[in-house]
Image (cartoon, rainbow, N blue to C red):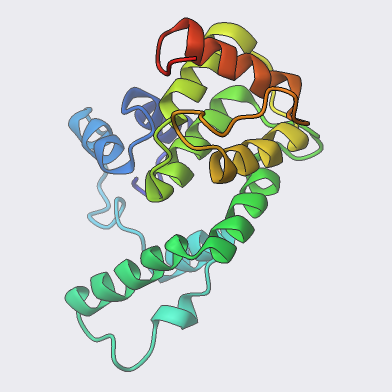
Length: 193
């Protein structure tokens, strides 16, 4: 989004695009933008990039080396960094970090809309086939904040239980919310019992 845009506008664009970043850009830029006399008002300048990277806790030095001297090379480097999310340990670290990063300061839980957006972004790279069903379930049946325990247990569920639930143990130590999710999948005929 435009560095000078409000967080509210950015969130509205993300929600309108079902938390898909590329689509959010389209939504955002299809809306009329206020005119400015400053021709650089919609640019992210060096200071803005620095603040953005700092907020994301992204090490810009990692991608800013002498070999990156064009947009194409930067795109290649970013693609490489994105591919690192396929590494199980790195994804685990990023996933666990995301909870603390995304929750409101001073809160112990994550707002449901924020959690859903984060899951859709994170699992887009991991391609967990049940993520949209999980998000629908939460909106239909839960509609509350997400605890750190639920956040952590969902990753374990996604990592260990296959999408058709053939290895799901109903007597296992899953939190009640995940057990309810499994029943929801059966009720909706997403998977067979």
